[in-house]
Amino acid sequence: MSASWRDGLPAEVLADIDTLFGTGLGVAQEQLADHGAFLPAALVTTHDGGLRLVVVSPDDLDAEAAEVNVDGMIEDLYTTLRQERGDFRAVAVISDIFLPEEDADAIQIAVEHSTGVAVSAIQPYHHDDDGKWSYPDPFVDPQERLVWPDAVEEAGPAEG
Image (cartoon, rainbow, N blue to C red):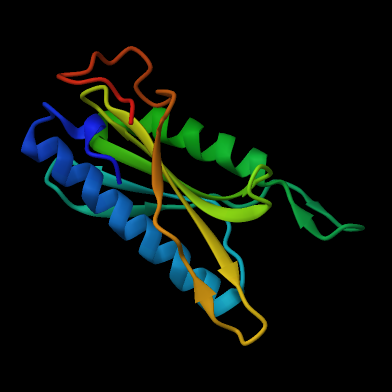
């Protein structure tokens, strides 16, 4: 991952972000290996440094298509995170996305810290005919602040 977005950030903030990225990628990869897919979820870092998983149930299941409203689930996660943000230092929303320019699926970990830092790690993934999963190196992009929209960054831009 690019180091430029990390420049000037306090060690505690970087530790929170790194933990959420690492744990989020691990959870998503485990779900892919076990089930071939995963639903959106969130990880939060509490003020005492603990990690907590936050999940929501799909509101509507299209009986004909048997598809889950993933966008609705992500919005529900962000609503829950905004309502409870006073209990958290940092949050990460984990989702399965499609990258049309690469014609590939990817794990997205959108991390937001209460200090104002917001970045997204995106890790493409592939499943071959032999059942093996491959995960090229993730890349980092700026992320819109949705949980703490008015937070002011302590240091450094959230660009990478």
